[in-house]
Image (cartoon, rainbow, N blue to C red):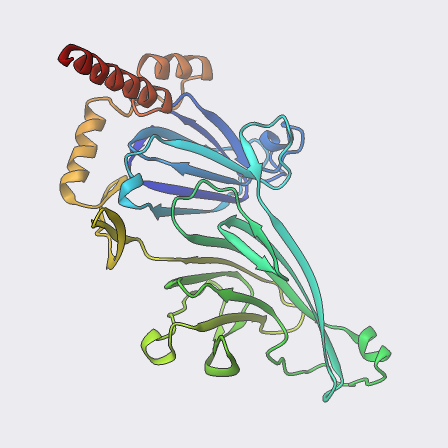
Length: 372
């Protein structure tokens, strides 16, 4: 068991599974549908865990090797705004098939789409099939918004996207324009597109499988002509950083669109997309909360993520004092582990916070009554 404070971990299992236990007294088993642990829960597919560490907690995460020794996963550390860093910790699973009696998981949207583009001039047709898993934030597709129920406290979007593009000869025959050779040139209409929210300054794409071409186009809201356009070829296992458009040159009213296309027909492209608004400092002016254009400072050491070094030291002091719970041996069975965390619980749980709030309110009422 090890401590955390001040951020969120997102664990997304692609193959295999995890067994999670923490100082809140919570045990979770999650992973792919092929694992014994997942299938034993009625076939529930729970691949995602959001762990909001808040003011602090201890947890352990052990690989589930009951079904397969192969493990593949993403684990992201995500910063949270300063005002939420000392909130009570919580844990949430995301499922693609959450059942009504599964209180530990909520639905994760999965959007599947197939679209065919026909080029009349060249006489070819291409069908692109895509699957988008919404791990965080929202995905707007054909004016229908799919939103994740992940417990996030800042504006971000995390998508897992897979897509393929293939020649559609049936459509070509229907259009009576058949191109004999297999080589075609993609145009802007072919591929998977993502409209980048104008207030997002960060967009990162990690290419897990395949190779692709990424085109970013910037247009004005009242003008369909491209103000800027860039195209890059991206090989497998690359990390791509998409820079925001220059607001000073292009104006605030811009539309940024990213289009991803497989490099070759039939290739599967698999990538993780992360996009977000920076965490800006907040201040109060004339009694109203304002947001500045300066990013919040970040201080990180070991397993703690705060804003300043003295807050990191305070986090480790609280850990040593046992306020996040006391470590346990990972070989403890569930009964002994539960007895341990009941004896040495995390002091930042919701029930403890609510009790302390009631005690503080009672003290204020007593002081007021005594004063009166």
